[in-house]
Length: 363
Image (cartoon, rainbow, N blue to C red; front, top):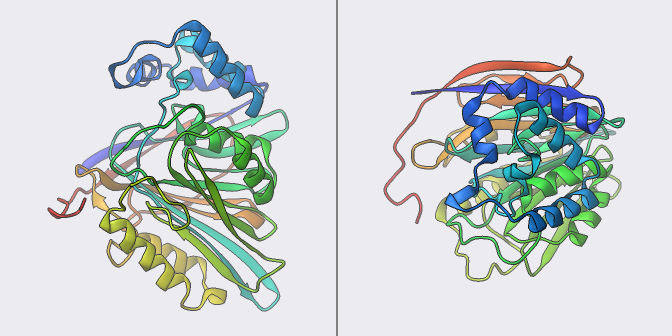
């Protein structure tokens, strides 16, 4: 058993003020601050010219983000150009499952967007709400400023899953997922807006993006450095439908990346369950799919083996609702997140129960 502290930090104001507030909330975590300023993989700090080039790219797609980073760095007492977020190698493999299902009961349509984030203890889990420039979003932070997932004030929801489970690496120049998710949440109102922006952004890794919105639309984008392909469902066109993704591509040839077995099994399980009676799927059905242990469902207990469920999320874009379960949903509690909570940071202690992974699990 492992005890994990989950935080929910809320900040607001101008970009600089929001960043400074986050820094003040987290500055006592010296280990976290060190990780945020230590070059990844034992490398060296970026040359100033390269850091400035990346900062300019950030500003193009996420206006105000550099001021937010500077506010944070001023609060914790470090140089903002030393923040590891400016490194182009901000990529965590993560073995995730996610799906969006459009249901219809009579005339009432609803999208449920579900996601499990499965990995190990690489980064402390911090759910971050930022309200600035009349915009707001909530999502789990990656290096504080990027996002693993999230929902914004318009009801746009974004989740991702890695296709590079064996970590083949980043190819070429461009964004990787944390700042892509942040850009979509900060700048887009609908799934179609987000797809247009994602298709245009320079991109450098292998990943699936699932995007849904308050109109009843959802889009799955399979993105590689060479190609991006999408598939969509829309409330105005369909009575029901679903999209789902594990840790492999179905539309894009992935340059020799071979899917691991458990990804294929999860994809099949989602398709079987979501296709059974799509129009009548309820939020309890969604919880059950996320909560049952693999291979019957999508929850994993293999924390030391690199595949444990660290959090689960269910979005209802039409009501701007976000239900989060800290730790495994097998035995966890679903919490409705208050995006209008006052600024500050709350902590929740959760016990994670580890199980040894089967010997052939990563085959």
